[in-house]
Image 1: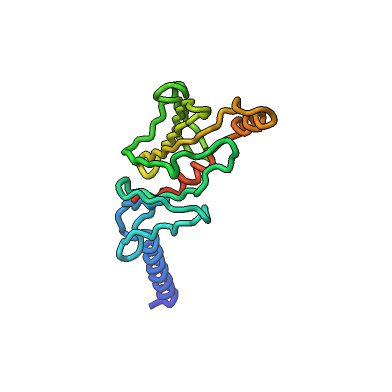
Image 2 (image 1 turned 90 degrees about the horizontal axis):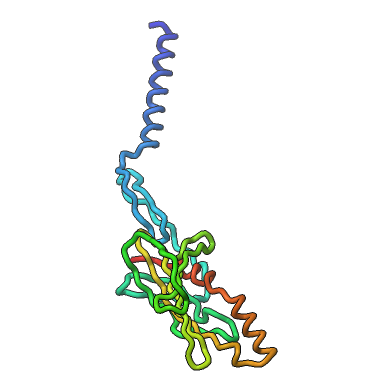
Length: 203
């Protein structure tokens, strides 16, 4: 047999085997199902046994925070022991009460903060969508404000509810009155709520 023909046959066989091995490595033959991880990511099936890939290990982005677990709602989340460090604004019921409902996440804006149903508006905090409802009522020299933050999580909607008490700034003379008013105008708790929401794990 012509030696060139033999060489050509060897090269052809080598290439055929190489291509077959490469194609096998690119296509596992596993189904295209996905597994939803607690951090919101998804993983597919891999390997010869088509087992789901491992979910990412949770990262503690809130060192020093406590963990709240609600077996009934099947959710865990981290929270700070003291949500505010302000002088004239204090937490009333903390950590928040939590409820988990089926999706989709929808936010209907409107209402008034002093009305019974409160004022609802959609917010974006650090790129994450929230539906925040705020209801305020004055009593005994203070203003009690109830907050409800709703956000999507793994095809569910999680709602965190808590209250803050603000001292009526008119109760003080200057300079405390001005300090109180300045603190209230600058106050925001959305960043803390976002960190708590992103730490939430649905079971």
